[in-house]
Image 1 (tube, one colour):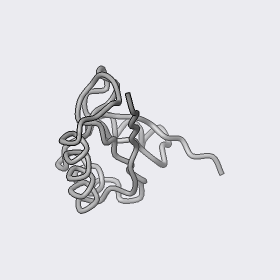
Image 2 (cartoon, one colour):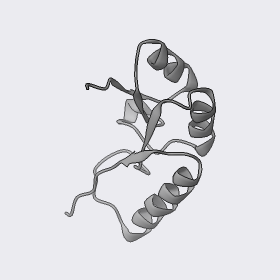
Image 3 (tube, helix red, strand yellow):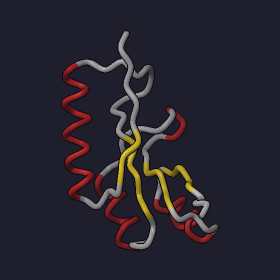
Image 4 (cartoon, one colour):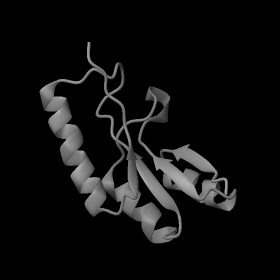
Length: 98
């Protein structure tokens, strides 16, 4: 089975994605920056309106490279916990060493 996954950063985009047949969404903020960590409010709104949709959340605290400081990694882990509590089905992330 093939799933259509759509990256989005607004509730309106989630509505359009579901209407277009998406079964999974990648919930982000700021797609122009390549996608950043979304708010828990956006995730909760999407999950309450479309409980059948699989929602993966981006874990990326800032734009730019993927080399994170220890403090940024702590932020990513805290965001991960809060998004998990808010209904995230999975996560999308990347990290590099210098």
